[in-house]
Image 1 (cartoon, helix red, strand yellow):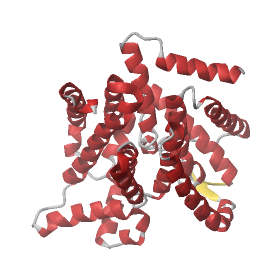
Image 2 (image 1 turned 90 degrees about the vertical axis):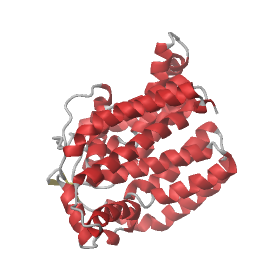
Image 3 (image 1 turned 60 degrees about the vertical axis):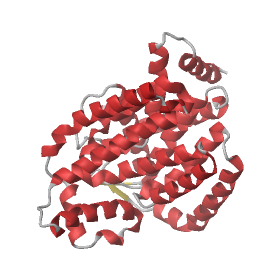
Image 4 (image 1 turned 180 degrees about the horizontal axis):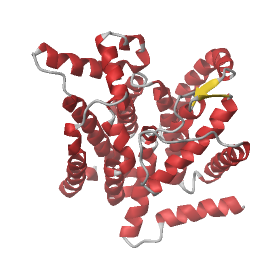
Length: 355
């Protein structure tokens, strides 16, 4: 492929080096917040009671025990550097999967956006949320595999399985792969069988899921109905998307109040209209449609699964894959002085909305 040419690899390597330099100050950072609790769980062997995070927990276990076995003190440095390393690998993978979608220049821009965007800082610097980095890495490897023949499909299948052992929301990876295959018409028959298996599993689990949905939610320090939580999480999603465009006001603890019924209604309708537009325009604007679906699918578990915090920046790590591809496409067209791809696709969206 063309992404193996020397100038292309050099461009991506320079972006990776820039991102590494940006995260170098982390070498002096201590463990914070949940980091301490997770490391305590490592020593108490509590982590293995959570099989849904087996891969993430294994990385913590190895990093906690290997230095001790060699008589070395436990240091935050190795934990932070591994997080940075996974992030840099993900940045390279972004370039590889974006290349066939938006071209060489666009994929370089996409890789750069993902590598150095300030919104990525919490996911990279916060050791306890390493699961988001590993989950995204599995998703990107699976995407790469979908485009690389039979052997690539085997790699994709392994990546999807591993994703289920990084974090609970790893179950969404199969949906993301199905969505990608549908939009780009790849392996549709094979993915159809996989979708049937997933649907059957969901049907079997539906009684448990429906009973769980009626339970009160404790989030933001108060007890809420599930509808209140869902509506407020939609508001949190729009605030996180605003941070992508206007990257100021970052904090590890965002203040997010429960939204009123009116704003929950407005947010729900905006998402519903977005889905309608994607359905109508997926053939005319495949990149926009793929990106919109990827964002919605990747945040869906966080919209419906109760969490104590309404809004955390690391929640945008997986959705940022699609946002980076969109941004890379737009920047490439602007750089080349063209009025074609992204503007035409955006106009297609507007025309279909009017229709």
